[in-house]
Image (tube, rainbow, N blue to C red):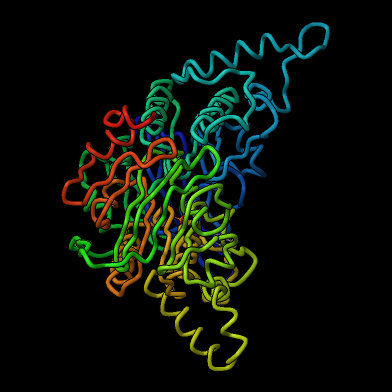
Length: 507
Ligand SMILES: Nc1ncnc2c1ncn2[C@@H]1O[C@H](COP(=O)(O)OP(=O)(O)OP(=O)(O)O)[C@@H](O)[C@H]1O
Ligand SMILES: [Mg+2]
């Protein structure tokens, strides 16, 4: 199957307190192949990549590079041997330029011993051009780049360090579709140069588009490696979850009746340059999707409504009364909830237990009837941990030790438990595995059926098209179009989102 084995992973095990993250994992990565590693949240993917890139040492097992056994002392040692990792959380120096980042710690010097910016500029330019990147200049500052541009810089940096294996852990989780295409073009050119890629993602379409081989991990064990041309997404998913998986989710479109009153009405909402004159109504029991390209202002709309940022102009009418939405404390008190995008920075208390993270917004109630609440709460928290399949040794575990996807599930559980009247969900299924995804759909659906008004922000159009009753498409801070689900499809949404149908609306 593989012409030249670049890296042999042989019997790798790794345990953390209470968790066997990897259990005798063994497979091979060929030269110049794109090798996807898939598995449910907590299957051990990131842990394995951390071992391959020298962050962790395995408890047992060995790695062979070019048929020679090798033990990485640290990430630098792995890098010297040609293994580079593009992190889920990018690790560039924000206030330095692109080229300074690429040559960090090994600045080029001329004969006089001065830093040779000219040469670095040229080399950097070259590297980026080979990747097909033409919108990044070597002297641009990292802080001015988009996430996808930063990724390209990380890849260019890896190449300039002569990387032969580049590890990408969920590289597309916060970039647009178009940027994903650019990343894939870069991956293809890396392949041509004989560079191998280990690629982690929860998105099946991507994996089948880019990967030559797919390795499935389940509960820390190696299940199987398949050629992507010989298998199907369905087979991969069943191997991941260990059983037949074909839960078809179905929600009937909820139509707004004429005499109904909205639970939330927004009139002429504006905030800085990001939200411009946004108006809409949300009815109890309705799922309203807010879609559009990344950066269209969707997150800013819900953050303004929730009181994370303060509106400049406009009216917010909640349950028939105008509210100010000054702070989240105020809006939570009224009965709103927000699952924010980007689990690390917002919302989670990493050093606190899973249980406390789930129950934290209920704190005022706990104080009054402490004992009763406590047992009831533990039961509910455990129930959600089971329903969402949050992989943790127990609800007493600190959230920082959970895998990325399981952290996301924890914050969703918090808001489900809190049963608000209006719930804002900002990219709720980012980084979540297929099984949990459909469980989250079920829960959102049943919350809506119980009368909760839901605003769903999602860039994944299939998600919007299965869940939403109505769809608002945002473009450049404004609402560019409204569609009912029955009248919507991916093409129409994209046309609104990219400003091909609403040229006249800008004035
Ligand atoms: N430093 C740590 N301490 C304790 N447990 C850990 C630590 N790192 C990972 N784990 C546990 O090891 C298991 C594997 O985690 P890992 O991050 O490798 O999963 P993953 O496959 O990358 O999942 P995801 O798709 O959610 O990113 C999980 O149960 C996780 O909670
Ligand atoms: Mg991970």
